[in-house]
Image 1 (cartoon, helix red, strand yellow):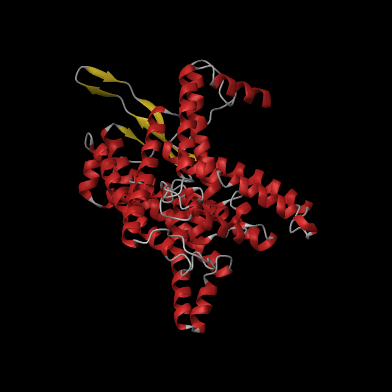
Image 2 (cartoon, rainbow, N blue to C red):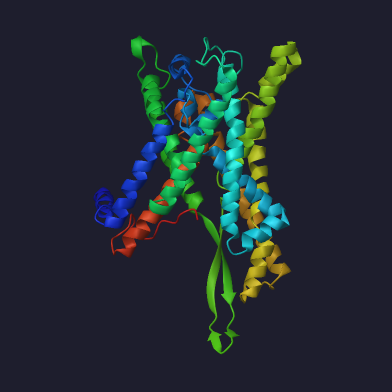
Length: 460
């Protein structure tokens, strides 16, 4: 089997078009990583890197999640500190608004409407970047005073004119995100895979060397110290990794196929024969979005109560801060409930069963045993409602694995994030999608794909 995989990779470079696409993609991804390490002007990036080096293992929370999607760019005070997330946020905002605002929904169905929505998303990205860039400029300016860089000593800003520093930093960080957005679009158009998703995935995989080093220290600490993990832990982690990856692949590709029957119809003098098809409903329809939403919301109460306790020194705020601690039982319970809630929320907002039922009726299609129109819409709603619960439970299990590893085995966050959570879901999903595109190029040139039996299904 290994020889077959190696031969498949060789075949990728025997096809000139596919070879050029792969090399083009790798070159642009290397530029994306360069953007994540080149420091913005006027900032002492060496001091901040030294601070994180002395901090040791990273934790979750706001900086942990932010570093996950940016590849740790904020640790270098890099021009790519904002990453590609403002563009993702703008796209999600427009997608949600399209589902609730009739004018945008009508525009999306018109010819050329999607192009306009993409353009609106770019404008919104710039606005979000300017606001977030100014926020990071203020954060670096007061690095030793806030909670995010607690314990930092010194001054990161090298400029005396702070007003110009803030404006310049906001513009530079905005430029970095716009450049990443453009590179992602170029990869999607002229490379292989989804460009924006690959930019995020490369940022996640950039943390892998740190995870390897942390794993080595946990099993073989320097200076004769006692190891925090042993051989039994190693077996558990290997079995868990294989099982979780297999589960993520299975559920990511899992779908319920709704049979669709098309009746014979006549258009003018032409008669179109009927046929049978199916409507795929993915089990994990929301993808990774419920986890991101749940994490973002749960960060807010803890930060607020911690700030209130620092100011007023009241025990009630300290207890509330401890209640929303990332590794506590209450936090995990609320976290799980929010993931399931946002799974249904995302499906209810994005999945339009009324539009699907109307399109089927217009095209002469129907579900066997179900009347067209309202009955079809209700059938699709009930079917999606049932499989969304399964997808939400799956996301919940994957999301809490890193926290459980820390609570039960004291596995550091640097290591645990590769055994579950958003990082594993995004990485596996993007790699499946990229492999699907590579396999389609191979099959077009009569080469075997990655699998001799069956085919890889992407997320889309």
